[in-house]
Image (spheres, rainbow, N blue to C red):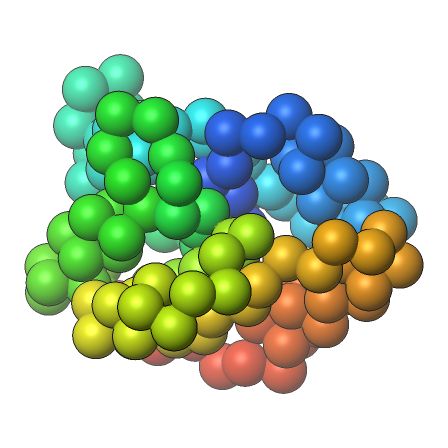
Length: 146
């Protein structure tokens, strides 16, 4: 196993970041989460460019939680780039967003999302959803090997 993160959280809302980190780490303090605040940084991180040029592209997170409405590059474009590149298409990407629009859901799945989850507004429901995401993608799911 490498020293990489378990979850790459791409989210620009500081409140959602704080709640997500709190919930995931409360469930399992050993979960390694890296937070990125915009789509451009996410692309650089995944594809080892820019500030991440020294990274090995084979060292990827076990799961990406991706907001759709991001600064610089939108989440759907980030998703498209990840899923159209042979080196990264196996990374599970979960769209975790406030959107409930059928158009956004369909576009995410067309772009290759592994899951689409609308962020619950209720605090307890949001916690429950995050616990299930962590349990499924980090404990139950068997990831692809590069």
